[in-house]
Structure formats: C-alpha cells, structure tokens
Image (cartoon, rainbow, N blue to C red; front, side, top):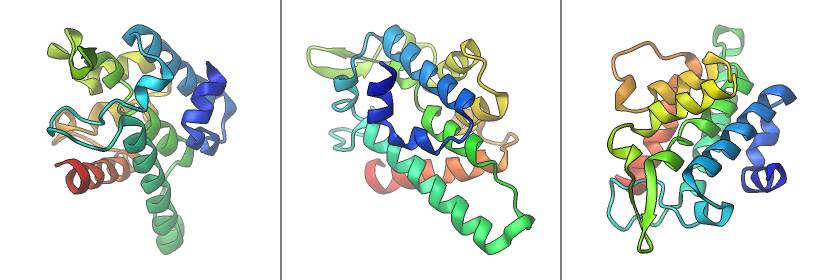
Length: 177
C-alpha cells in the first residue's frame, strides 16, 4: 500500500527525512485500514461535510494545501532569510496528516459521505493526533493536526502550524466555505 499512497500523495517526497516520511505513510495506511477505505474512495470523498455539494475532493484539498504551504515557506524564507524559521519537513508532514483523521470521522452510507459514529464524538484533529501518536510521529508534526481547526483557536501555534492554518482556511473559504 505504501507505493499507492506515494502515488496518491507525491508531496510525501518533499519530506527529506526518510524515517519521518515512513511514519507519515504508516499513519495513512492505518487511517485507511481503520476507516475501512480504499485508495479509490479518497478520490471521491469530499474534503468537507460542512458545505453541501462541494466539488473538491479530500485528496485535492490535502495536496493543494500542502503545496500552498510549500509556496508560502519559500516566499517567507526568501523574504526574511534567517529572521524566520520554518522546519520544512515538519511543515510538509503536518500538512499531509492534518486532515487524515477525517478517514475515521467520515463514513459512507448509501453512496453518500456522512459523519460516522466515531465522528459524532471526535473531530478529525483529535483522531489525527491519535493516529500520529500510534506511529511515534514527532509532536512538532502532530501539533499541526491538533491546532489547525477551531479546536486550536487561541492556543499556541508553531510557525509551521500558522502557515498550515492559513493555507487550509484559504482553501476552505475560497472553495468550500
């Protein structure tokens, strides 16, 4: 399944640390297995259930937001050099797993994507952190899942989490919200 995930998410190759990359892939494998999903399902799944008839898929959203994060990092580093510190691997890894908990939050019933039983109790930032913890993902990475949504409002956000949060909400508000 690793090769399928790498094909689905080519941005994984942006993670320079192979150990971290393998942990992120393991999180995706676990989420797919626990949620009962196949790779093909992710190409049909909407990126949000908060917007009726959204046309953007889950994978399109994950990949787009990750690429936006990489672009924002390049602009910030080129503009400010050593006055800004963004850990590239943490940013990319975090961007790729921040929404992975949706694979536990969502389910499919009668061909429609809906909030599943687990999703009624735990939103994806929580399940995403849980998946990361199971695979020993550094807290600097799982932090992006923890604080990227309303659950992280008002709390500490690392530089990587700030970049991700704004890229994520830019995509959501322009496309879905």
